[in-house]
Picture 1 (cartoon, rainbow, N blue to C red):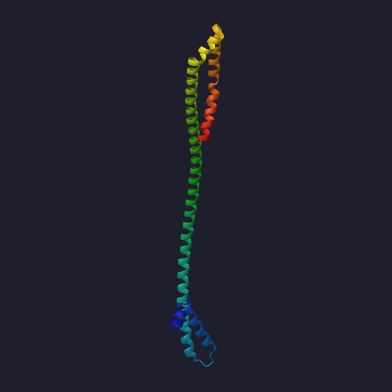
Picture 2: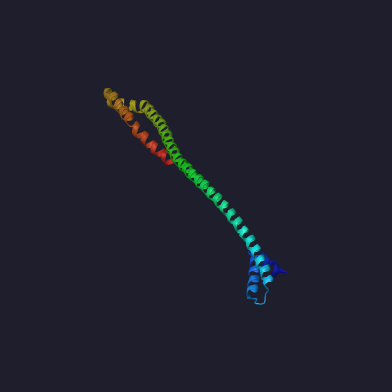
Length: 173
């Protein structure tokens, strides 16, 4: 049972059986003319059926090939669109990352400026409360000039202090 099922499930099983039958008839010298004509007509019918099936299969194959080409073109168009969108996303991501980096720098700079200003205010108060009386006592009447000089140095050191605080904060981020 399995051998028969296997043979019938083969591709072109009927055609192979017909071919073997035709070969046997061709080798048979004792076949009558009527029997030969009958077998010839059966062969013609089988050939006609096979030709129709081949035409149908070819037609279906051609249609499927055309559809496949169309799908491939659409797929290529979609692939190109996806590549374009990916490039735009990459470019926008780069711009966004640059903007974020700039915002972080601005935030750090503002924070550093605020910290430097607090440090300067504390140093100014320390200078007014503690250093000015000591300088005036040591130098006398010219103590105001030394005090003013110290405050000028303090004012000029604001930018370097701001720079150092900013560098310190950048290391944190």
